[in-house]
Length: 177
Image (cartoon, rainbow, N blue to C red; front, side):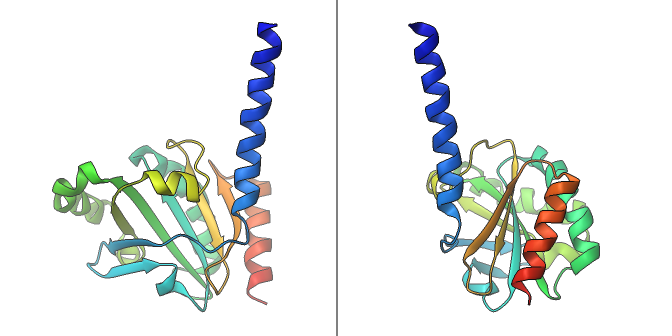
């Protein structure tokens, strides 16, 4: 009986994760207000409307390695601010607000200067984003593809694979037609 209950719980949890991810597609990206490393206030998705956008989101610093596996192929293909709008959004909890200048200063020294306009830090409550963005693990990175109206058309999670990169490029190209 215990094994059956355990198996049933695993199936339910897995089904909910799949449903949440599928349920996310074709919905408006939730508002995130942050400040770029160059000091500009940015509101997603409003400030990127009219263009296809790829948003890389992470909740932990170590997820940057994960983001790099996507950005290292995406940026050479599409550029930073050309046909596709690319942003990295570190999501930091409200507890880090007092250390904002120190954290952002550290990021400024580690992020290449051309990416400062496109790296936007968010400091605030995270709970609502875990649900609205279908976050399964705070340790992963999440890649969201938005159409010109800020509607989520694709979501990728974790380190990139060649198959996922092909899927990402195909999706971006189809939205730019």
